[in-house]
Image (cartoon, rainbow, N blue to C red; front, side):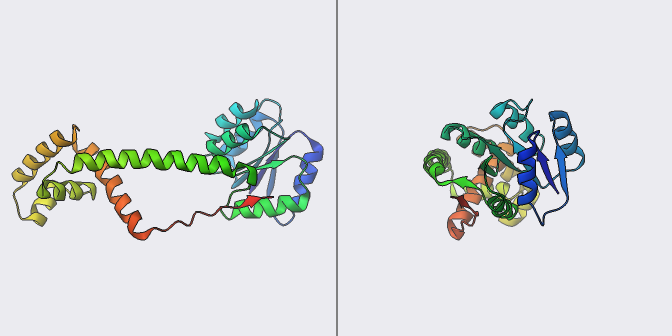
Length: 230
């Protein structure tokens, strides 16, 4: 199902022409109608007119996205500033098109987004690269800080921490390492002290991220689809 939200009849007609072969199509011309259909019908793709009354631009779109986190949202707008368009992508939209886009281009864009790709202008790739650099730097900084703390652990403490990260109970850890549960608890107390954390849940989260990073570095598999529009 695809939800089309606009009070502009010409835009709705262009959307319909571009969406030949897609069904069913649902229509909304007001904010209340949009919210109702998002809650009841759960559309897979949501075409939204940036200039729809009551939406209130970017801020209104952000609020709508909170109601449809699993919906692929495509915004149609007049020419926006690059910074505003990029902010929309950061909030979770899957595509942004000019409102005068041709029907055949709409068809291509929606097919791409339907298959999990993005529809984004090439001029925004610099924002994407900059964001990637910032995220990577922050991720590396956090990982380094965690690794620095983990280096304070003994080999046995590290083994126990990794097993906690894998979801193992004290009883199973004791069995695997052939030690007593009392010894496991003693090691955990020392682990909490060295890592400056207070409980098992925080340790599990910390080690889960570490395990994920190790697995990712082994596979090095990046297959997130991306489609760049003209």
